[in-house]
Structure formats: C-alpha cells, structure tokens
Length: 379
Image: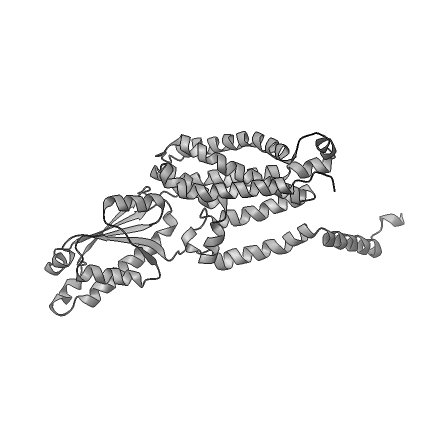
C-alpha cells in the first residue's frame, strides 16, 4: 500500500521532468512568455479608444477670415490631420470611398459676412460613420475648437454674437450609417474574423496531424511534390470558407439588417484571395510546428494581433504609427476595409484595388514560404 501514499520524491521527479520537457519544447515556452508580452504591448501602447490625427478635409468656395482661422486651428489640432485637394463634391465622394478622409467640413460662401450679420450660417460636417467609435470624441473636439476660434476673432462690437444661441449652426451628416448602428460595423467585420480564426487553425493542423498519426510516410512515398500537397490541402477548405462567409452574410442582412450596397459577386471574388492567404498562413505554421499543440499556439499568436490591430475591435487610426504599420501587414486589416466598403459604401473594383494589392502580395509571399518550408522528408 506504500505506493498509494503521497511521496515528495516522486512528486519532485515529475515536476523536474515537466520543467525539462518545457525547456525542450521551445515553441511552447516562447508562447508562454510571448503571449503576455504581446498583450501588454497591444493593450498598453497600441490600443486607444480615443483616436487622434483623423483625416479631415475642408471644402470652402469663398475663403474669408473666419474660414482661414478655422483651417489654421485644425492644422494645429492633435485630433485632426488635414487632407488637401478638395474642390468638388466628386473629390469628397472619392475621399470617402477610398477611406482617405474620415470627415469633410463644408464652409459655405459668405460665411464671415453672414456670421457678422447675425444670420447664424450653417457649417456642414460630413462624417464617415462606418466606424462609429471613431466619431464621438472628434465631433466634440471640432465643435469646441470652432467655438474657441470665433471667441478669439469676434471682438469689439461683435462680442455680443457669442451669446446664446451660438453665432453659427452645426449640421452633421453621418454617411453610410446615419443611425450609428454598431452592428453595421461589427457584423461585416465578423466575416474576416471568422475566416481568419478557422482557416488558420484548421490548416495549421494539416501537416502536423499527418506527422503525429504516422500518415506522413504514405504521403511522402507518393510522387506529389510540395506545391501539389499544399494546394491539395488548401482547396477543400476554400469551400468551407465560402460556406462560413455565406452564413455570416445571410445573418448580417436578414437578422441584423446590414445594407448590401455593393456587388456581392465582387466581394466573393476578393474573398478568395483572403481565404487562400489565411490558409497559407496555417499551412506555413504546420510546416514549422512539430505537433498540433504548437500549431494551435502559433495560430493564436497570429489571431491575437489580427483581431486587435486590424480595426475590428478598436479604431485603427487610434493606434500609434508603429502599430498602424504592423496592422497594415495583416491581411484582416485590408479585408475589413474591403468588406465594409463594398457592403456599406457600395465600393467598386477601382475603390478596393489599393487594398487588394497588399492582400495579394501577402497571399503570394506566405504561400511561397509554405511551399519552401514543406518538408520532403520526416527529418
């Protein structure tokens, strides 16, 4: 019965064995250290729910003293970054569709004259409301900034204009999501998040599962080369990805009433590049990992920054420039802009082309890496 008693020596031996195993499994040990550090960096430095330096364009047909003062104040504001080249409504439409502007401020003709007469002229602010979380603080800052400019410039006999009501009127036009419905932003983005999570995870287990089950020997004995094996493992899951995307799209439109302004066929065509890119990431992880656990850990390590730094959960422009640079390398970042642009803005092929190029480059590079990394032997 002595073997049933609790023995400190046996316990210590098992603990030492686990520490030795942990030291040998460098990938798992790296994940245990790397994931907390990554979370600290992302949540401590990169994530910011109050975005700054938002791109804003000013359109005025008759520059005067007050409109110039407003533009100068915007140039020195930390909330906004002025975007030039706005001369017509066509320019405004192009800025919004391409995502190069979050706001467009329209200053009407004779603004100063009407202001000094006490006619309460209107300032029109058009805002891209596809991401409601990026609007609240910026709208408050713009209103306060404009009031401060007029309070500084209205002197002498015009000081009476500063009394209530305000000497001008704000008109805010929220484009693409006028009712600020959060689901319009979140649900389309779920297409990319679901595909990223499942495609990377499923294919990440593909080759490691073959190796652990001992079926890799049979695969290696066939005349199939690396490219054929990898493409053969990817194609079946492309159909799975389209089924998942179709379910989310149907729920988005039928349950959450998300508008479908653009071409669904265009979205499905671009989706092929995104699905293959994520499948290639999973295949590459499976060629690096020695077992399925390591492959799952790598998939999580890729998924965490993708969901946090792509603009899905937090405003992309709220992150510092170094974090935005990292986010631009993630396929989910570009796919979110594409899917939201097509569904909410009705974007066409020319509008999404700037986002398709880095997505295609990522897909090609990772797929090539996976083929190179594919092991032709069991060693």
